[in-house]
Length: 560
Image 1 (cartoon, one colour):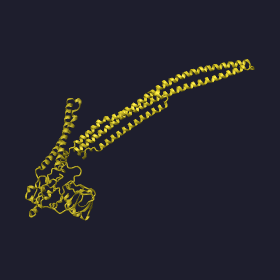
Image 2 (cartoon, rainbow, N blue to C red):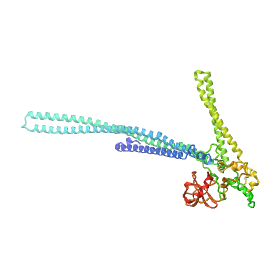
Image 3 (tube, one colour):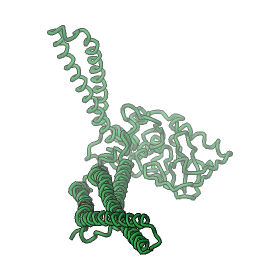
Image 4 (cartoon, rainbow, N blue to C red):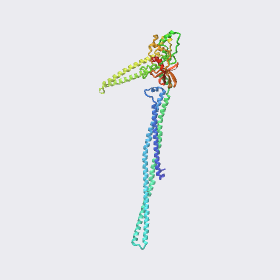
């Protein structure tokens, strides 16, 4: 099966077919190139997606990634980043192993094809030239034969005419002989040209053209093999990354299996545990003893003092709602006194550990400089020993400052650890009568001085002293009358009051305003006699009653 023997007369069709083969190869190159672009785009989108959901550094979001579920999600994001990298590998390998190689091969193929068909056209032109020479020789031989016949006829005519002179006859005879000689020469030339043409034609159709067509056939077969190999490479490039992609998916599965709901629940306890004990039972207040009630009302250690830690807002004591006594704006106090005891203890412990790490780091730096100074002293040519004295002094001062800081935070830590109540104790809500009869019950450690959010009041001295004279300040705290309404408000959004002191409202709900925003971003509202609390000022639209503002002035002093 050879194109040279089977397709000896299909030069033009072979030229078209081989051009079509090159077009197919270029089309496949374009296909692979677009596939690599898709892989790169997909990898870029995956990386952007992974980056988008990565936690921001030094943010609250980063702290949330200590839970097993969020750590599993973070592992998934990291694995997706590696997953994207494998698609980049696919793109790179296809570009280098297929696109670049085939592009170079196409250029070589075009040059080779051009050379073969150039040789074919040259051979065709040569045989056509030989044919034209044969035709010219044949026509000349034919013309000379006709001329010789006419000269012979003319000579015979002249020779038969008695009126023609002998000289004219001789001239006609010589002309006839000349024409015959020219015909013989043309015949010999035609015969020689014919033999040469036949030889060239045989050489053309049985040697030159078969050789050229055979090379074209081999070239076309190499192209077909090459595109087949490229398609196989196309599949292999994908197959090579499948194990790595499988590992990425395995790691995602492993991360998912590491999610531990019990551990996460425990971490929630550690994160939000306040350290307070639940309130005890409310004792009976005996109103049949007016004298004792009078003493009770004049004391700051009455039921309202105990009500500070009471999360229920249905009581009549509306004097203070602990979470909103004093809103800390910006950074909290250095001793974390704004936090509940348990959270404060954890923060202080973290601070102590951090300072100890800083001290260790500074001490390592000092030790290194001390060794360097010793080397300089022993080998002065290596450096000046005095040059490190200033830095050593700075490190010594830094270490001393850090140690003082550690002592300060350890003192606060010891204070908190000593203040935390024992687990077995059950605090009780004590009425004024019970307090009057049991003075020791009033001095219930620091818990009575702590609000549920961990901040401390300035009323310690008054709480520890039972029998103090009644003052105007005490009367303000003892006012049991509910706060007057100073306006109304409409809830713009739904608010879920989950913290102590807040109240839940639904969007569109109408409520009463009993205390304006004091600049801390919270407004105190009332739904009915037993339900009141704080909501974010931005969540409600307030309509104040100007005539009622003066009634509210005593409350401002309490808040302050």
